[in-house]
Image (cartoon, rainbow, N blue to C red; front, side):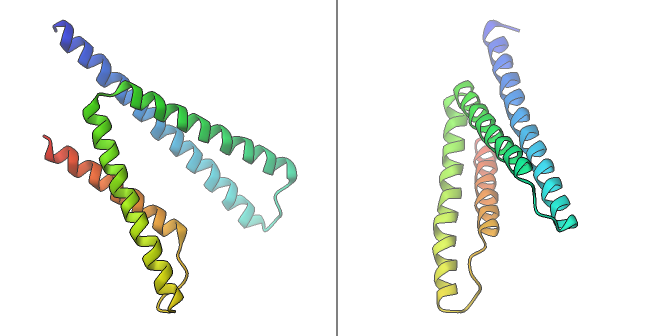
Length: 140
């Protein structure tokens, strides 16, 4: 391989390591939060102050690690990847910006129940992911 190909291979490897690390971080956070909430719900017990403090510390640590990993990701990729991510993020934001007020207004006129933030979050994230994948598919 030539020098440019080696540089490209190193950048792609770094890209996948950072992306994999962020996915693993999300999986770990999801497992522990789901396990903890499920355990507390099953026991029907109040969570102790110490466990709440530990949970808060874990949440803040995971949020900081995710922010750091995202920063590392965006400083290691090329401008095409940044553009693809920004484009998809904007589409996801528009999904949220349209869905929440529409749902809220429909609830205000009593056609449906109050907005469910997790459904809206999921729709926004799935929309952003679909937009990202569509953009990648279009550029192949």
